[in-house]
Amino acid sequence: MRLKWMVPLLVLLVTLVSAGCSSGAKEAEVEKESPKQSTQSSEDETKNPKSGGTYTIVTASDPDMLDPHRSSSIYTHGYMGLVYNKLLTYETGPDIDYTDYNIVGDLAEKWEVSDDGKVYTFHLRDANFHNIPPVNGRKLVAEDVVATMERMMTLPGHQASLLAEVESVEAKDEKTVVFTLKQPLTPFLNFIANHFMWILPKEAIDGDFDVTTTAIGTGPFMLEKWEDNIGATFVRNPDFYEEGKPYIEKVEYLVIPDVSAQIAAFRTGKADVISQISPEEIDNLLKTNPDTVINEVMIPTQIQVAMNMDRDPFKDVRVRKAISMAIDRQNAVDQIFGGGEVSSPVNPSLGDWALPKEEREKLQPFDQEKAKQLLAEAGFPDGFDTTIMVTDGYGQQPVRIAQWVAEDLRAIGINADFQVTEYATFYTEKYPKKDYDMVVTYQTFFQEADEWLRTQLRTGSPRNWFGVSDPELDKMLDEQRVMLDENERKAKVHDIQRYLLEEIVNPIPLVTNYVYSPRHPHVKNYHPHASYGNIHMKNVWLDK
Image (cartoon, rainbow, N blue to C red; front, side, top):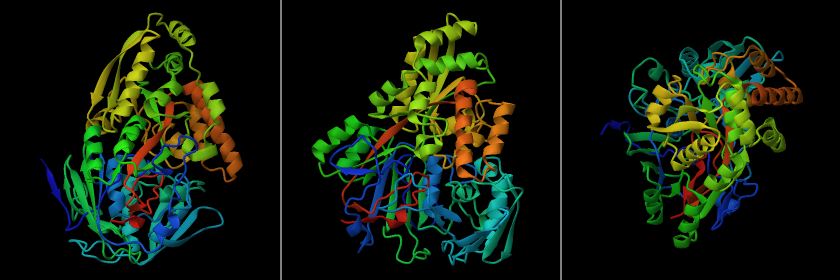
């Protein structure tokens, strides 16, 4: 066992679907139509909150490191969102829908954009880092922001893509940071609010402490310890910039891969929240714990089927189309998740940036006879053998989807071996290095249409783990991100998605499912957002 001790304090990470899977609360029932943010007792829950208590969550997996700039794992960012802040963030609360992306200040108190759309000036609020060596509670200054941004721009990864149009970032004075862009960029404020954009102290960038195993930020909680594959403990930051917050004294995160053991911990009061369980398990839980609050939400991501286009036979679009047509998406999401939708290249959680539901269903039909014809035209009348890789790091439901896909593919002659890979290996050694034939997995909770499109699919982009390279697509992807008229940009984004579903077909946007997450009724003012980082946790309090 690897024991990672940090500071003398403690916090939770609400993981994969706790940071993003608990909205639309219903008490003692699951409602599958139009999930929405809970308003249950919202007036009482925001007034006269109690301070203190320990909040415990169970989840299936643990991060492999704590460096939020080197890891895109939801588990890493679930932890680090408790420890760090961003310049901007998203609004949360009882009157805010789970997938509302309303930008508000975090470490930036206010900001201005120049008339030409190329200069962004951020004014920092008064905030202090955690009182932990070697940072020792000093004030946040503009140089911390500059050092953080420069680090993200030089490291390979998702943040570098978000900051690709930044020409310079400078500290005008101790409390003012100025970004100058190469050209106007419509989604830039969304990028700055993105859940990967955590601000580190300059000491982290200078190497004065190991950011892979230690975390010192300005956030509402401080990391006390991290025990690999066991869990983490965080404690309240007494110097957090929002006076009186957070309310919870301690947050504990327990890694329990087995769902039955998770439910047992919840039933006995050892856990306050479970990230995600199936509708059948919800029904059983309510028989013994009828006062349980069940949160339901359409997840802000999707399960995808990815094919490695550097390998045969996946270079042929007819093969990729055949695979897409072979899968009975709607039946799969209904049977395995209890409900959901056929997905779109831009996830339905981003509203009308995604294609309309009827159009995505029409462009992605379930037609196994046509799939067989396409395979024959591509030179595989008898099908072929391949391997599907999946991780159990998100629980058993994605594994069941992968099994469903394998069964559907057998119906058209494709025989797929099944490879279940440990989460850290899956996301560090296998998937991003294109060491696979086919993959079935969740994608990251992307926050902007440009992330779903350009970040994944442009030639050479850091999250293009599929081998997609298409000059016409690249041109369209570059055009949409500089369109200042929202309606014009939205029309272009829709055209790109149609092109993807007709000409590229990789990754296949399979399904966007509903997620069910139980919590005890003593957990109050619990209004998560569809992003990583548990940004709602500073407002949660316990009535026990």
